[in-house]
Image 1 (cartoon, rainbow, N blue to C red):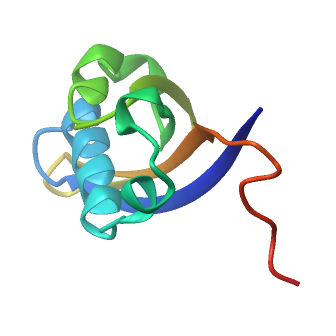
Image 2 (image 1 turned 180 degrees about the horizontal axis):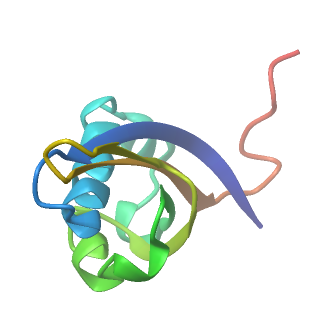
Amino acid sequence: MTRRLILEMGMGNSLYRRDYTTAACRAVNDALRHSSIALFKSLGIDSSEMQVRVTIAVAEPDQVDISRVARELPRGKPEVNVVQGGLDVIDPDDDIHHVIATAAIEAIVPVSPDDWQRAT
């Protein structure tokens, strides 16, 4: 049985180059910087067994290099999905597109229901 034990969120941007992949990678790194997780060692789980689901939201999903985003993850088996979302802020006077990406990272690990229980 697997359970999602961790959910982290982040935001990244590309202010002048309209680079959706850079914005996505920065969003992943922002989410990772919010984490210092001793859970794996505490439960005796090898982090290489962890499934890592990454959802990236940007205005132009087809512009994201999924393999480059996956390389940002230091552990686990990544699965990257890019969806419509995020935000482009356009400065029409200077023809600049500011790209804002959001990321959600889920860590799914194999656990037995007998190993732990949800606090109520």
